[in-house]
Amino acid sequence: NAGVTQTPKFRILKIGQSMTLQCAQDMNHNYMYWYRQDPGMGLKLIYYSVGAGITDKGEVPNGYNVSRSTTEDFPLRLELAAPSQTSVYFCASSYPGVNNNEQFFGPGTRLTVL
Amino acid sequence: AQRVTQPEKLLSVFKGAPVELKCNYSYSGSPELFWYVQYSRQRLQLLLRHISRESIKGFTADLNKGETSFHLKKPFAQEEDSAMYYCALKIGNMLTFGGGTRLMVKP
Image (cartoon, rainbow over all chains, first blue to last red; front, side, top):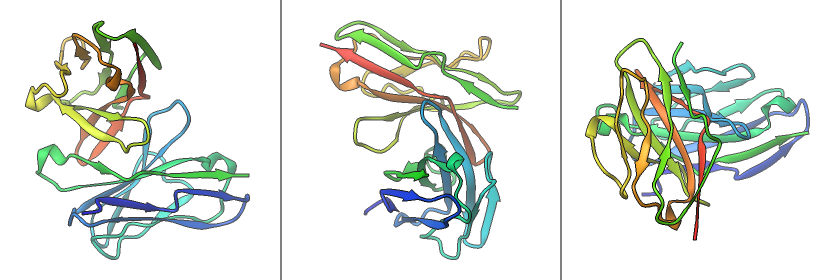
């Protein structure tokens, strides 16, 4: 199993550009999450999904959108990139009721908005 | 609102010394707490969970509801313990993370 995969690894955007961060998992996990990690800070939840077709906002959803059309994929969309969105983005997945819903993380995407 | 605080951004100890990474939480309900670790060039992974009362890689953590703490301890630190450590509070399906502590174990 590849686990949780994220693409791209790095990206530089100009203010106002848009992009999609890709996340996929091959563990048949129902739950998927997007976090951002700013320098020196903990991870903050952006959006999460408990299954295909179901998404919900986390702590810091403004400026982002998500969709969950399949169990495997959970892309994160930035429509109008802003410097405040410079961060490292982590995707995670879990299966409810297994090991206290342990979350498995992807390697992260480092995004810089200039 | 729920909150997780890790007061030390950096903790530096010598190999063989005891180590304690502090974690305090605020939550009105019954907490479920975890420690996650990120080694250099590796992804974030679960280290241990309070409900299991387990010892992983020599680390233990006890939930102290009176002090609202979940400190991570190891009696003898090893160089391979150097990493970022995050305390996390689980509420429903979501985790709230602390700011993390970088542990550096010097030879």
